[in-house]
Image 1 (cartoon, rainbow, N blue to C red):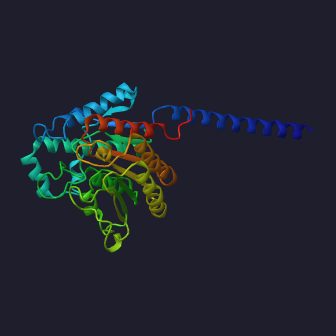
Image 2: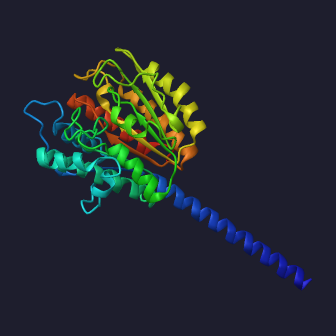
Image 3: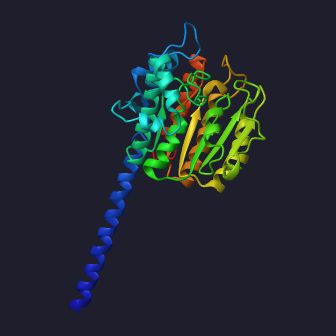
Length: 338
């Protein structure tokens, strides 16, 4: 009888402890989700760069974005890029010595801004991989997805930040499969070039192939082992929310489910937003919310939510900020326990 009583007491005690642990861990999880799950990384250095007076790629793109974040009471998301982050060796995984040296001589301020952008991407990836946040938006400039190895800037771009980020993730953290989503109005020709024969990177781009740089034909699907891992979707002028969202749901989701990415990178260009002076799509902020949600759902399904987004184009100062902030709000609110 005594043994039975001791056994029952022990069993009750064990069940009670397990219950407390589960309850405690659930509370921790709930508190974690109530906190910011998104970090926005930026730095004043990215404001210094100036191509020429009245050029559309200007510092006001970042200034207005940060102002609007603070106005929307999202200022707590903003973190300063760690300038101690090592970037130069990682830049060399994509760009040639000739290109790097030429930029340093010809455009020292522009190159410094682009190096800072690379540092922001690396810093963001480290934060995600160290579980300091779930996802990151890099509010940086200049953009990067047109940067080649020509020794000069191409399409306002100096270094390809997103391509360097993919290499960093693969080499530093040994994650093999990277999905790059590019919704900029202009085709990411540089990103395509660097991974065209690489089956470890799935590049998915929606763009207007008739616009600069006049690349991005749907017929270009990759080569060698990379065949099928380069997906170009040409969209005509006037493309709206329903049309682009439908493509993401029907094509991107299917491709991603087959690929099973371990990390997602987004070239977040908001020149695909309505009323941009360098684009002619009609995508609204609600459209960007839907595109962001699709990307997040893929990230949750395949890679524990790991996602880093990098600002590319967007030249309507107010429109760029509104589109980017809607994107950031969606990143921060996804799957939260309220």
